[in-house]
Image 1 (spheres, rainbow, N blue to C red):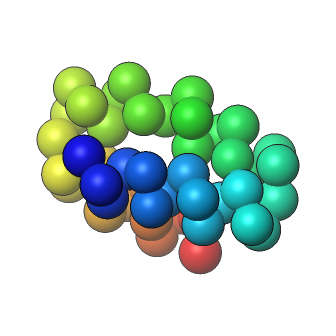
Image 2 (cartoon, one colour):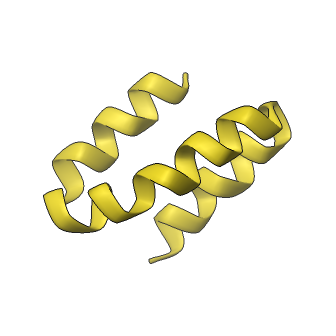
Length: 45
């Protein structure tokens, strides 16, 4: 999943806290699907 890796890379450049948040959400994204993935991108912005 290159998109998930991109989220971690972007958030790590913004803030370590955001990176941790994204990492904690990866499991939920995997379960809920691309809809939650798009929602997470919106929240990270």
